[in-house]
Image (cartoon, rainbow, N blue to C red; front, side):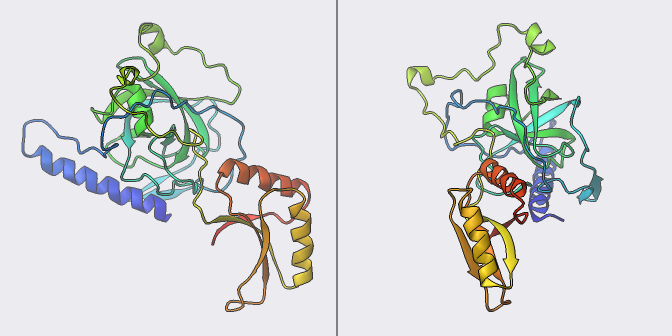
Length: 297
């Protein structure tokens, strides 16, 4: 099993067991929540994810895959997808860890985990209790417990108004890049409900949350590189380096690992932004250079 999925599944199993044990102490179930920031923060300045056309890769899209004995199949297309059920959120327990597609999870971003939607996908999530809606980018897998259909970041759950409750009934609708975001039926029923969290930060009562560079995710681990081929000849590798260097501002170097073999590996990076990585990969393909793959050094 993918180690990221296994880690999330183990955490889900632990939380479910803890909730069951605690619920035996009273007449009503007690939900064990993931933790958010150490103190109240304002997230109203963090923008929703903006849908845009992205190249779909193998990262995060293994199908089928199995978690906790259940097999899931990633949908070939997300177009027209709509789903109703319970949403949950995840925060500090996974903050800074890798998502299923290799990006770094940021609880202050506007991303989500879903079991079967293609990665990446953009969805509008509407809280059926209050009509609030957010747009998030799916870059992770889960949730794998409790019959929940989507896991949101702390920020997304805060904007939807269910951080304290832990879960909420929601409608999930896939958004195609360029699609006009019309009001949902829920929003029509609650015209006075704001789409973002109302906080006391206007009076200076609580601090603003640290906003990620891109609210839709894309942050990569510091040791992420693109490898554009492994060559037996130093001259051949140097020729590819010269060609790539004309197409990108990222460093392009030759790495040799004599303890393993005598190959000369052409590596680009480090690259910290997945959007830029995907654009560079597509650019190299268009220029008929070796198709690069991600490596961690």
